[in-house]
Amino acid sequence: METLFATPQFIHHGAVNGVTGSCHEYRLANNYGVLIDCGLFQGAESSGAADGAGSAGSPQINFALQHIKALIVTHVHIDHVGRIPYLLAAGFNGPIFCTIASATLLPLVLEDALKIGVTKDAKLIAAFLAKVLRLLVPCEFNCWTALPALGDAAPTLRFQPAGHILGSAYVELRHNTLAKQHYKTVFSGDLGAPYAPLLPSPKSPYAADTVVIESTYGDRLHDNRKERIKRLEQVLLHALQDNGTVLFPAFSIGRTQELLYELEALVHRLRGQAIHQGLRWDELQIIVDSPLAAKFTQAYDALKSRWDKEAKQRVQQGRHPLSFAQLHTVDSHAQHLALVHYLASTRQPAIVIAASGMCEGGRVVNYLSALLPDPAHQVVFVGYQARGTLGAKIQHYGPKGGYVDIDGSRIHIGAEIITLSGYSAHADQQGLLRFVLGMRKRPQQVRIVHGDNEAKQALQQAFKQHGVNVVIASDDAL
Ligand SMILES: [Zn+2]
Image 1 (cartoon, rainbow, N blue to C red):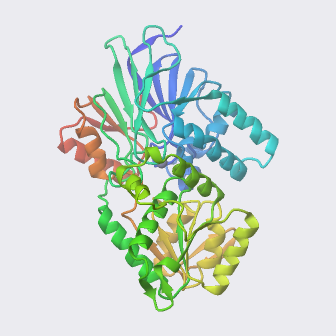
Image 2: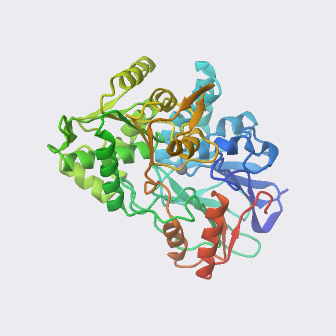
């Protein structure tokens, strides 16, 4: 028998003392809860070292599941969905709610994650994906959908565009509590930056009683987009002077497509102009070396109807922002290895985009092993590097002429390491504030999750200055 709580409870199973492993439990009754995301821990957070909480970083599901009635997925980044295989293995058999675009993308992401981290057994993978497909409930944006029944509480959910990656959403949850009809909580998921290319920026919810908000960049303000594009142009001009490869470690989903979009714009604007004597912008080879990224680029391309105004205008002008002439994709592993060898030995000028974004695995690792020792090459970071990841180590030790260990080999870093910090798929402090302050009816409470300590505290201070009641969520908080 379910006993409805007077106000819902929050239990955080990840992304509370860091930015990865997003998994929040929303408890409506003693025997009724839903999960919002079920992501994998990465970097230092995957060992539990980040918070000293022992098994906190393990992918195994270490919390009770009997009362969990549904999983709600905000978007398909691995740090929000990567523990789904473990969730199913632990016995979860409820519906998985997500947006229609996420439902298309999720099987691709999980297949990739399983192959890299769990098993290469095609039968096992197929059986697992078939189960995920059976549980998926794809939802339209901006439509209320019923959650599993809970008497008169009548819980429902609604997805709204978050502008972070294709299909990404923040989620509104509504139910009747003993004290209030239509008690509403918003989980922000990851919110996009307002000027991010391709996707419309997120709009504030109308009202909520509680908002659970991410704080990845809660202590930063991003450069505006014009400055960012200018900096990208300057970095490339500088990097390509001595030829060599400019390597962008990037998330396959979202960041790769944003980069391609910006690179197409650069090449379009500077067509015919010289980078140096022997190389024009329109001769520059741009390579996406990630089969997953290539699949996602196709998915982005197919969903043009969801693009923002600027991107649609480019298409109307006859341009192909994500499939332009100089763009090449590398598919097979043999091709990939040949290309790494070719670029390392010839120093042919090229831009390579490869996953994973934090260099924790994937093809980018082979590029780093081969290119890092040579000063002719550059590695450009355009995304958040979680503590303890190879990406964070390269970012830290590279500019000091240090070294990193990759697959047991010590690699001295000769290549130039550049961080383009203005590039982010996450809202900055202004964007996060605007999300809440722009609401017609302000929430009674804002709960901050998904950030490092400094970011959470800075965001908390900023909210307080605007008179918002705000708490930083902790592991054991209810
Ligand atoms: Zn994300």
